Length: 336
Ligand SMILES: Nc1ncnc2c1ncn2[C@@H]1O[C@H](COP(=O)(O)OP(=O)(O)OP(=O)(O)O)[C@@H](O)[C@H]1O
Image 1 (cartoon, helix red, strand yellow):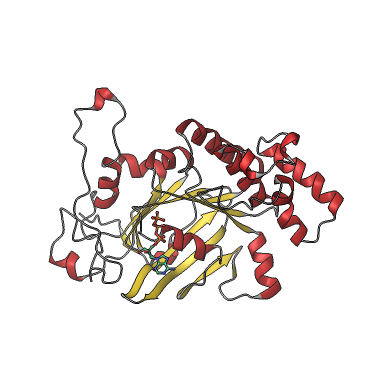
Image 2 (cartoon, protein in one colour):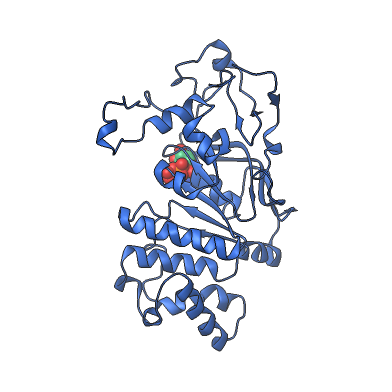
């Protein structure tokens, strides 16, 4: 139950990682509603977060909870229904034309499927050079910079003239990362970047991202449903359920001392690969996720939560500060 030290806090006050400099990217009250024939889909509802320089912030949650929509809004690939995005403290929610192009250079995205996101008719050299060409970099300099980028992501010179279909999945994702790095961004949204890859290749790509971050203190918003991957790569975690954040905390805390019942169930529902742990009862998340067209009025997790009472069903829980960088929106947090 609630402790006395806990304070109510509006989500926009969720700080960047403790001790970090000011946030590179900050989202405030981001909301996206899609009008469909079946009704208005409340894909993302009043979500706020910030990413510090050199930080990897993970966004986790089940399929359909709004992760990709949130990631795309954060880098202005889609416009929010309401809410604001700040890049280096500047409100870029409504910028257009040249200002938008400048902002987009600083915020890149790497997609899950590196095959469909690479033009099959272009060589790797051309694909990686595309953002440089658009920025007016000379032909000669483009080649030099592309070769340097390829080296940084572990692709030899011999790949310069190759086409996407000549590459493995892991190599294609390296190309996707090189292309994202080309305009020297401050933030890269990685939307399930390793989900389509074999486990051994996943580790190589994750290690590459870590190496790049050490070299340049770039920030990542890392979207994933894979909690093992997120544990390895991220500094902090945002747990999302049905369009809203329910917990934000340093990554180890999500696994060792979760505050939200949903975080705990999500962690416990991960398959157990270690046979000596086979006796551990695997918790299953039960019940259907409610429709984002007609979400529950109070806490959105109330229909699946073992602790839900009348308050949970009627009153939306505020995001509260538990100290040490831990925030949770729950009427009955697991600690206190
Ligand atoms: N263009 C759109 N029009 C209507 N509904 C949409 C649109 N894009 C997303 N949605 C809906 O918004 C909700 C959130 O989708 P989103 O893809 O952001 O979730 P996600 O957590 O990234 O899921 P996944 O991991 O499966 O990609 C879903 O209910 C989805 O069907």
